Image (tube, rainbow, N blue to C red; front, side):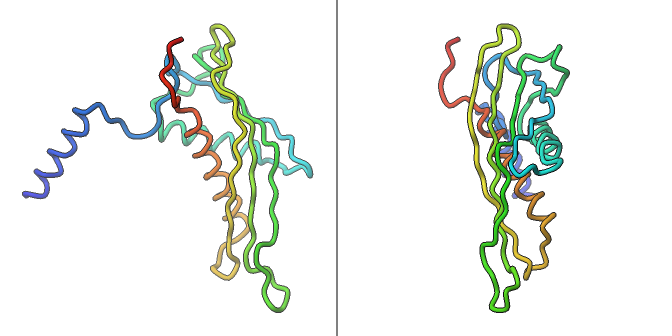
Length: 166
């Protein structure tokens, strides 16, 4: 019972301090539109743009207070372009069997305020994930992990790191 009360007090204290879990969006952005990302990978990686768009939308819903809406109703539009999706062997076994593979994803991101078309953010984000065949993981597991990780990084990039005066 004492632990419960202590936890309850801690939660009340955190809420009272104005703490909120997740990421903040730039001032004035509450409704956001996320059209399907463009895919400019060479060699072409089929459907990566759909997987990444879905993952970013999911992360926005989980980690921000943003409402996903159509472009016409949005305060801002988040546009992305998958620039690179590479996978390569990291560790090869003694008999030539692949033991670990790495995946690198690079995405260009821009957040545009709809009322005046002002560019609020423009970044290129890169991340890497690896998987181990010896641990029972598959290439699909690694791809899903890489997409999820880059989606988390992209949403984290939306948080303003300065005091916006405009």
